[in-house]
Image 1: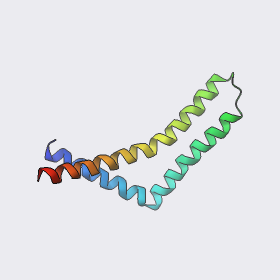
Image 2: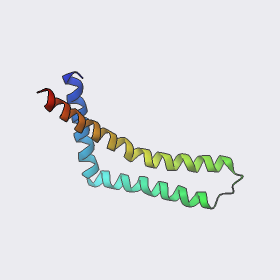
Image 3: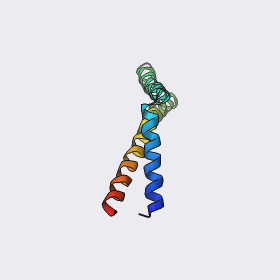
Image 4: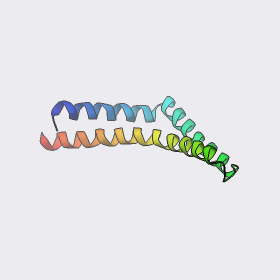
Length: 89
């Protein structure tokens, strides 16, 4: 992997780490978790024949889970880039 790509991945990973540790990051992750929880609760009260509503709630839950996953993936990629850089150095 070219050095500029390693550095970019490392920087994004560091930004993701700082965001996850910040008050704003914690707040937004909490909001995403609440979205997942609310979608699950709404799903329990949705008619099994209301496929449109079920799909909507499933998508809400997926998006709430995906947000944290994207940040964790950036963090992991950054850590991997740093490890690769150190090995090549």
